[in-house]
Length: 450
Image (cartoon, rainbow, N blue to C red; front, side):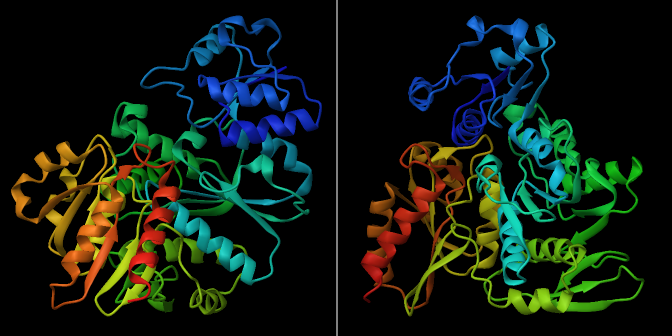
């Protein structure tokens, strides 16, 4: 019997699969509403204290279930006591898929993994190659349907998902960047780095290994992996010319993998900023590994529309460019947009992460005004007191857009209205997608006819 812990999107997907295939299991979630939803599905919902541990074969954990820091979930503690193994849904799904001979691609990184994952999906689609794209921010793997033999499986992998792998191996693995995040879950940055390294450590012999080296912690991961015997990693950089690797300069991508510099292609307008150059390099290397020619990759990329909620262009009118960067849920994720755009009217706030807005203070050169929303207002007022003349308290997204609409009438330059909150969204919205959708609707209603 299996024991499913966590009944959000991932756990619900898994429960449907187990029910449909008459596989015995019990389930649990700490949230009463999700417990009731599972019962209505037909699940047997059993609390860890009442679980029949003597007949449980394994725990299948949703990624949000902690196994170490800040403390193991009680079900995990009991599983360790009863010597019951645990893993995640992706690992179980991988086991069920082995007969199909698919190729597995894993993309991780503190930021950028969703964009890179989406670019690969786009290029595979344009190339007419059978594939499934899912994982961390996309479709749960057990919701995949009709995967044919030999397909490409393109997975966005969070560190939480990497932590609970058991048997899974990848044909290609990418680490885009590592910056301090989720430290409440890992205890220290060193543990977080080790978690990300799993993506490369689980690549099969002869597979593709790619690591971005543009942050201190990414460089540390690269060095750790090379020292551990992964000498076949291809380093990528959007900031530095590499003696042997792939890098960007002046919006063009170059390779020195063969010892001499070769221009591979140009960045499209839909992917501004150095961070997107890194995403493109990683996606290009994966697609090349999957037998898509570099020239064809860049040809297809010219029409790539960009990822929703990640520096997404909402509206471009004479007075302002409106950018939805709602997926920027921490300071590091918000930084690329602050570096990319000019004359920024910045909407920021929500449920603050541990680092708050402090890491962004040295990067406000392009910011004209800051509009604070959400539960972080008071904290961010204090953290931004050195630039208090730029700061306005709006409290809500609606009021921030109202205030910006008034301000735009009095300026003689083209502004960038940027929603890049550097915070989680659940104080005022369901999730970052909901927050971004509300912003887009407001912008189109109020400015679309101007």
